[in-house]
Length: 391
Image 1 (cartoon, one colour):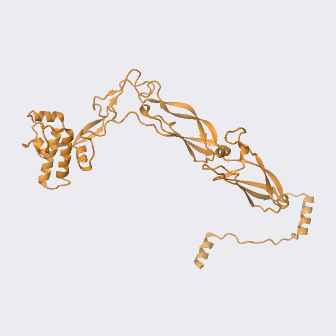
Image 2 (cartoon, one colour):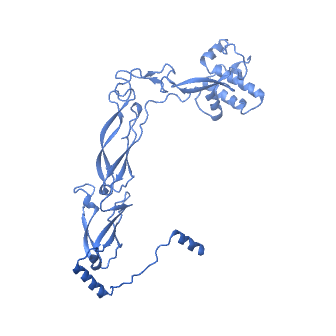
Image 3 (cartoon, helix red, strand yellow):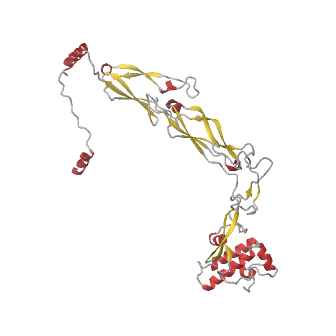
């Protein structure tokens, strides 16, 4: 290669790294074989790559400026000693930026945000409905107190890595049809951090954090349900190097209640009454969900532990009574309903006198030999399909 390397790139002899890289990217877009299949362009691309390889390396550039042979006597030509950075080719086509430095991503930080943590907490239905404050135990990573998260033993500090000179990456050269392609990989000596800890902390082994069990108070808002997650900001795992903690999520599981069954914000329950009470009517004292709340709780100030439920005369089994506003408070306000289903209990054992009285009642009502009434039941799937086709 007899032509001056600076002339090949079209730059002055005092051009800085940014100018060199800009010129190389412009020429690479113009002469790269994938863009310009002309053999002359391929040869030109080899010259451009070789020129940039020399001028972008301070030692080779200094040797060239002194009149030396930066290629070590190797033959010129594309594919023979044309060592160039693969990342520079990618920059040329995709506009990647090393800002003229030719470097890659650089060292990765030792201090990073910690992961989020998740624990599950079981509470009672009344606690889910009206809210509660509970103390929980969590086992997470916390900042090491011995080294304050730095990872180095007291009195020592991390030092720059001698292998990568603090860059966190080392170059690996590989031959290909494009010549010598240089790729950057994380430094194995420092694991990409750019620094090493010669004397790690004995408490955390250089990680900057240790496991610890601690107590937290979590406030469960009124209206939560199974699956609801309460977020406690920055109460999760502390990050490596003493980095900021992630969040802690408390997932709620509501235990089954012996009386009430929850459906959304509504409560459902079944009340069983004797046949005579259903026929004549009666009043039943019903417990409320508030009866499960500990008296003096800050969550509920007015405790109504029971109310009277009126069973109207002639109530049939399966009848529902909807009591407005006696369900579960909603997370966004309001309150659901209480749905009470009446189940009429028919006696299975009668003594002689009870049986005699029922016979007298049946005679008075003309029900000694009732025919009953038969109503059409629900059709099967095949019956519904048949009717659909018939229509």
